[in-house]
Image 1 (cartoon, rainbow, N blue to C red):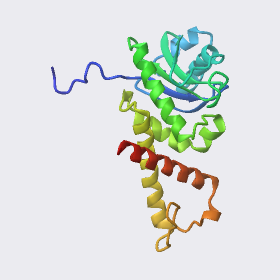
Image 2: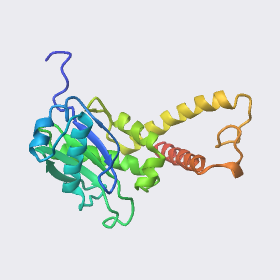
Image 3: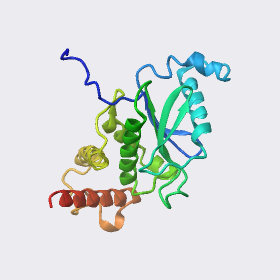
Image 4: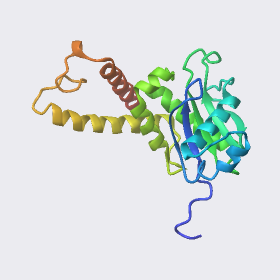
Length: 232
C-alpha cells in the first residue's frame, strides 16, 4: 500500500450542518466539491435562477428541511433520510420526544457509499458534544450565543471532510481548551498586572460576572469533574 494513501475505513463526510427548527443554517461546513458540482441537479429539482454556490446550498438545505422538519431524532438514535440522492443522518429537533434539549439539529451528509451506521455514529458523537457545551440546551438562542464554540466543535470533529474525533467528552474538552487558550491570551493583553479571583477571569469579581462568564465557569467545573472521574 502506498504510504500516502488514506486508511480505507477512515470516515468522511461531504458536509456538516447545524440547523434550527425552521431549517436555517446556524453553522456548518461543506467539504470538497459537494454542492459546487450539484448545480444542474438542484435546477432539475425545480429551483430556478440559481447562480451562486450559496444559492445552490440554500436550495439543498430547503430540500433537506422538507424531509426532516417533522422528525425528532434522539441523541443516541440518529435518523436517516435521502435528499437529492445523498444520505443525510441527523440528531436533534423538537424536544417533545426526549423531554429536553432543543430544536437544533446536527446533520451529516455522507459521500456516496458511506455506511449509514458509520454516519449515525459520527453525528451522535458530535450532537452529544454540542449538548455538553451548551449545558444540555441545544436550542437556537443558546447555539447563536455560543457560535464560536460550535465552529470550534466542527473543526475538532472534522478537517477537510475527514473525521478526526467522535468521542463526545474528548470533543467538548478539546473545544474548551482551545477557548481557554484564546481567552487567556486576551486576558493577558487586557488585564496585565491585575490580580484574578480563582476561577474567574482577571479583574472580575464574583458579583460582576456576566452570563457568559458564569457559563464558562460552569464549563470549567464540568471539565474538572470529568478529569477527576477519569483519574479514579
